Image (cartoon, rainbow, N blue to C red; front, side, top):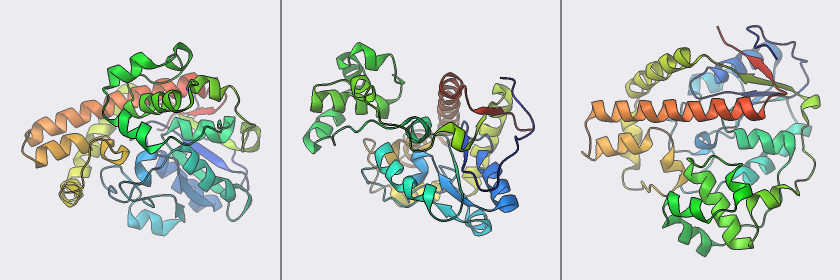
Length: 290
């Protein structure tokens, strides 16, 4: 399908899904739709659920939150055990009750669970998770079954660790569990699904500008507030930019080094997002912002 620069017609009472890479402007689009048609903006970004990072994860500002209702932003403590299953259970009631949801974010697995269904996998025992926390990414990747390894992002530690934990705890690969996925809660024919298809150079320029704005808006103050609780094993502390800025705060690298490494990490993350969206959201309406 050809990428459009104009938005499709959006029925005012139908749920809207907006997916896109980091820094692409999807949150601004969600706010634009909410102000024009009404609705509640619902977070679909795994890093933005935590209460410790507003600036660093580019959560909506208090001023933006005052313009339209926002849900599932910053509602979890930094050390919460929060997964796609937790997110889906919080979103499901919003589909049938209250204002029309406008679900926006960059976590593809959240959207997959919503529009394609989520396998009902048993919870991971604490001892299995503790064991996995001590392993290297390479060790966990080597232990995965072939079918699962072909389906996940092998550079994403959180995804690899989740697959490793499922295999260790249940004796079955994640791909095997996913083969038994129940029907989706929100099929694509019941919503307007938009995915940002951005130009690489355009996006990289926005990533650099956003990092500058983030530093000016108080990113280091957030880092300072979290220094005593920082744990690189926690998903919240692996948010893009956090490890680099914490290293700078602790004196392990200069601000220039932290800025460059964080920018590189963000660009790499955006590349993985774009690849994922193009491979798995072919039935969504592609949109290229001006």
